Image 1: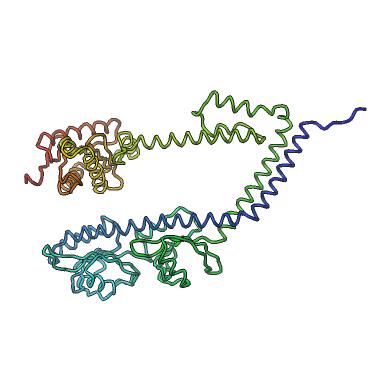
Image 2: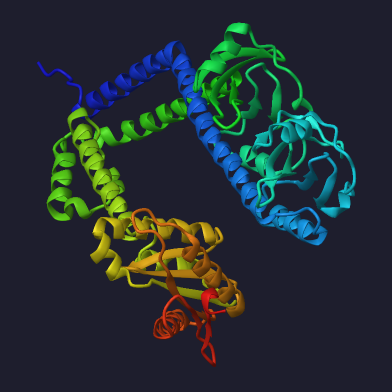
Length: 528
């Protein structure tokens, strides 16, 4: 007797749809049961990692600010030249951007110069604890937060001033605003973890030194004694606390420069939002899978081998050169095919990653870390415009003698040290590259020929005065040229800078030569 049999298409469609529904319901149940704690753990780990990153950045910022102050202090030998003090204060504030205000104070705590002059504090005697500690210690100093003479809540960084004979003159110091805009607030405010995360600088005792909310700066958090001890003894970690009815998940990292802590705080509401977002995506995913599978399975019952055949064809024809996304076109609707498709995708992603790493390595010099010729051209293309751009070609004088006398290892150390000196001497927008051997090329966007020549001369003098490990002192020669933004101008600028460099070499080395309508050689300081 004829019996009605279920069709394979209907059977496969029903089994697939039922399996998807059951599986997704189980996954959603597991999501609610277990995923919340996992998200919390992930969030707080991210907070710790980002707090450590911000702590390292802030440490570098404070150390660099101290170095800027130290350099300015080395330029001040007397407090009698008021004009020089004012100029140096303005230069330090405007050029570095680290400080909101800069003051020069004599050993009697009387202000000798300020920047900006608009605060009108010259002649005022400072009575703050920070000022007294700077004078008493006669050492570099970073103060706790306090209210300055201008009424701003600040921290103060100072550097002592001495005469060439070693007599103490006073100090030069800079203030960093904690409740107003400053470079420090820019560093801590422009983070990219998530919008709900809150960054603060907090002392081990709970004093809020900096917060995104200026009204909280200067307040004190209620931290248990055990937590205060842990903050003082550990470099980073985690804890949770209550604030305004919200549970805060806080990751922290220690600032080595000051002993303060960076707090990166997220709330449990953030965890709930992530969880609900995952649930919504899961629901839409289930709906999409059901709609797709119900239609496709009826048509593909007799074509189980099709995904494997297509994957094999892709591997055979495209190899590892094909993109990982191209594999997504294969409807791997059962486990074995899906595993194979994922393996092919992973392989292609890995190959793409290796290629990206090799591309990055191809654009940098492996010894100095500077851009090579290819990297230079890429960076130059990014700043291409119609304005004037300056090129400086720099070559180490008698570099072969250095290698022959001290060995190639010493020569490599010289190249690395010179690269660091060039980076420090240039602006962040400038491109520093090594074209090979001992030749370095600097690209200075929006800079005139005269300013470029001055920069090259400053670099030449800095190199002449520097001590290079294992070698001692050495000199460089430089050629300077400018070019506009039209096509082919960069290659012409490089050629003319190179010609100027050889002109400097022919003039006796340790020179800067400028290539314009008439070649000008800037003599070394030894030749007057």
